[in-house]
View (cartoon, rainbow, N blue to C red):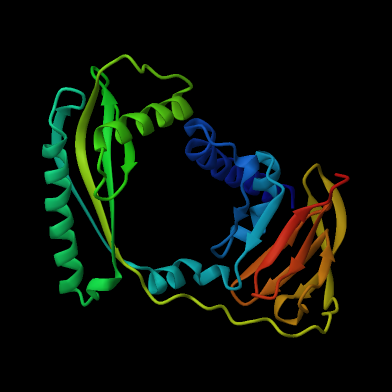
Amino acid sequence: AEAALGIIRISTSNMVQAIREVTIERGADPRTYVLVAFGGAGPTQAVDIAESLGINGILVPPFPGITSALGLVCADLRVDLMKSTLLQAESSSSREMVTALRDLSDQASARLLDQGAEQDSVVIQWAIDMRHTGQSHELQVPVTYESRDILRESIQEFDRMHRETYGYTMEDREKEWVTARVSARSVANEYRPIEHKSTTMGEPVGVREILEEGGLHSRALIYRREELGRGQVVEGPCVVEQMDTTTYVASGWHAIQQADGTLILRRNKHD
């Protein structure tokens, strides 16, 4: 059991570090987010990951093991195109950048239509990779589609993003437009979850001996997820089993079955 716990600690540490790289190291505070736990093993380690990052809420989809596949089936059709520009933003004509973005938009829309998308369903988004003159790294700056003042809008947003990402900005330094980017998508049919109507409270189907973090041996009740009633609350430590995963609710946490089939884990307020 202790060897297994050690393996889980290493695995959890790797996932925590990966999340830190895309949040804290980019200026985002993970404590302000809800952790979505999916995949066959995600819900098993979600609480450990959340506690390491100071996250107080976890969302477990109805079928975590096939969440990625479900997302692929329901995803919008999308085409992303880019074109190198390398223009001095303040001293170049905005028309040149707008022309590049419009050309990319026409190409992206045509590709979507070739794939069977309806013209009315196509949504276009513009962005420009920008940097200060002399920098070797860029920020992808979103700008309004068919913006009437792309120079002012892009510079203001770049300064804001630079300050948020790196903690400072250099408003007096010249900026460069490096790459024009266009994303075109055709909105897919809306995913409609099956409503969880049962209000019958599920009973534990067994008890399992577990080794919690810190070496504490305890007993966890076992529940079947499909038997949980809408609004039912189960207190940790407990295990919620289903066909494609196992959700572990640690001590100091509780889980709530939602009407849309999701399972919400929350840290108890006094912990």
